[in-house]
Length: 301
View (spheres, helix red, strand yellow):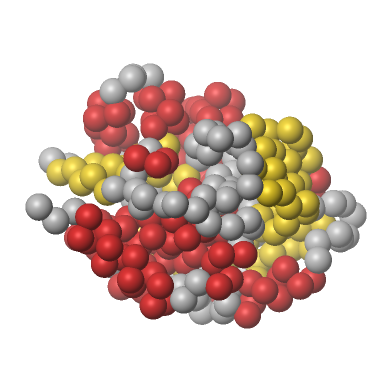
């Protein structure tokens, strides 16, 4: 039985940055977040791929202890593909092409062994599907929710219904402003907390992340990277490491969530150092702990 289930996309990405290019590289929210989580926990993922999806990609995830039993192989279509590029402002991805493939008809079905998971990450998918996943997880201790501007524009009512049912809402700063119709992030977080989540985390890219709870807030720094090659998947890596750490601690306390945010920032910073999962494939627990201690020193005063 798994204690952490992640539901989201498994994709093939073609990405160009000022520092290189990859074609049909392993990507997707469930991919990045589960790999990041695997440094702390034994996650299981739910997703769909097509007949063209390379078997070695699933084997790579399995070698990290990730349960891929919830990944359906649809032999009647192609895998979800995204193509995009970054200019020297590496905070913004520019989409060239999106091919949904089998992901267009994705209906997440949790295997029986996943339904008792105590920790769940609803990665960036249609809020209607996120609600369906919540109906399948029996008694989760903590549910983390992510979304994007597309769903805010097209499924706002359904998205707000999901927000009411989760413990932690994860947004970037522009999404928070858009969803709660205010330029002020403190007001946006306050509006989110009134809906039901215990915690709201607002990502600010190279400027770190903010945590809000009832009466408290916490500001986490970003890591000052010298070598950024590809930021694709950093937000998902952040989320995966965050919930992976919480699952490993069997905790949802604010103290541990603050630590989890730092671990999320650490793993995301490593992810940005290379394309696809290449840097995380070389990453060690010792490197994670070393950079975590650097974060601690950065916040001393």
